[in-house]
Amino acid sequence: MATVEEIPIQVPSAVAAAYRSATETERLQIATRIGLMLKVATGSKQDAVDRLKQTMNDISAEAEANGLTPETLISL
Image (cartoon, rainbow, N blue to C red; front, top):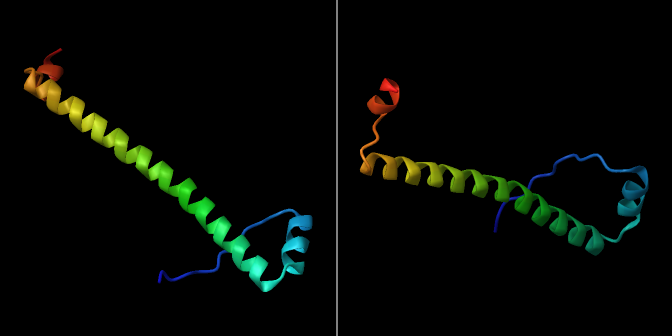
């Protein structure tokens, strides 16, 4: 099982009050949903960066295969 950490987040007062009045089961469900939302939000950015890097590498490899080298670019 993955380890968990507590992180402070700021929410509107009404949301904080509703959370405090929730049952333990409801709090666990809320924490699970928030955790998943944060995972998706942070993971998708990294995936996008990884795809961009891969695309750049692919373009670079294709350019080199077609005879374009860093030296050629400098001479332009």
